[in-house]
Amino acid sequence: MSDSSWGAPPAVGQAGYWGPAGGGPAQPVPGAVPAGPAYDAPEAQQTRPMPIVPDEPAYGGGQGGEPGAVRRGGPLFQEFQDEFRPEPPQARALPAENQNPEPMPDAHQPAPAPQKKSAGRDLSAAIGVGVGLGVVIVASLFIEKAVFVGVIAVAVVVGLWELTSRLRERREIRAPLVPLAVGGAAMVVAGYVSGAEGAWVAMALTALATLVWRMTESPEGYLKDVTAGVFAAFYVPFLATFVAMMLTAEDGSWRVLTFLLLTVVSDTGAYAVGWRFGKHKLAPRISPGKTREGLLGAVLFAMVAGALCMQFLIKDGTWWQGLLLGLAVAASATLGDLGESMIKRDLGIKDMGTLLPGHGGIMDRLDSLLPTAPVVWLLLVVFVGSA
Image (cartoon, rainbow, N blue to C red; front, top):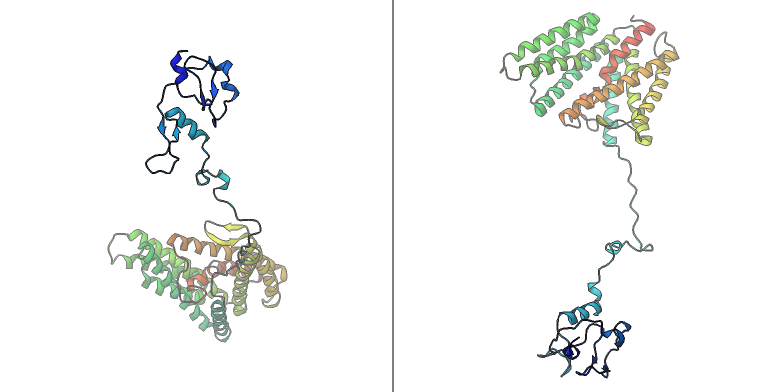
């Protein structure tokens, strides 16, 4: 090692030691930090020479240092200072788990208010409208059968108007309303007067009138318009005709009342049980609000109501027939409701109309009644005959 290396500033760990140029033993400078064991004299011969860096004033130019103080310059000394300089509190990074500290366990936080189950509709309005419709239907049913046939015809015409209006608004499908409304009303009357044969003839004539009526407009979209028209004729007036056909029996008023009661009870049981206990979805892609528990409620309520109605309202009926009738009504009413939900989901709407507060439109009340009518008519004919 050359002699000039002893006159160089000490390396890291040697600060404050200055040896004579002749190579004598190093003497400590007063106030200097003693060297560690790694830099004792026996090992000094193995260290490499350090570059000479001139002294610089430590704090000058009015920066607040002591006069005459010196500091060691150069990158190595600066590295030493950076390594051992205490880190300011604000520069210390918090651990990852402390970046978003959780509130203290004893912090008082308001508990979230429990959410009540919502019925989804104005129940007071729905009950009021339902009671009003029930009074009108029962009064017309037992005062004069012809009046009740007129009620069916009016409901069919309004239902056709709602359905064709939504098809036009949402899908630009122009199913002709005039032939459908006239043919639908005629279909109901024909079913009451002539039975099933009259209903089928009226259905065929209504479909033919729909095809011809649509020819008066542009041929664009003709196929989809007439297809929707024939579907509407079958879905609304033709299925409603079976209610008029039930009315033709001697105890026809009681048969229609049984049909209405079982359908309403099935819907009510599904709603009540599903709202209170429903957890498992029945058909989430079609109707997210319907549950399997609700379906069981519909079956239970309808079977009990069916046994009572067949035993006490229908001539020659028995309770076990009512159990089967109630089971069939629960199934058909649920399928009818799902079918209507499919149509509304395809159209992107919640209700078919707003005519009935708390219920929606007429079609929203006919959804479970229409497919149930032929089921009840057929089972009553099998159980107790058509007379």
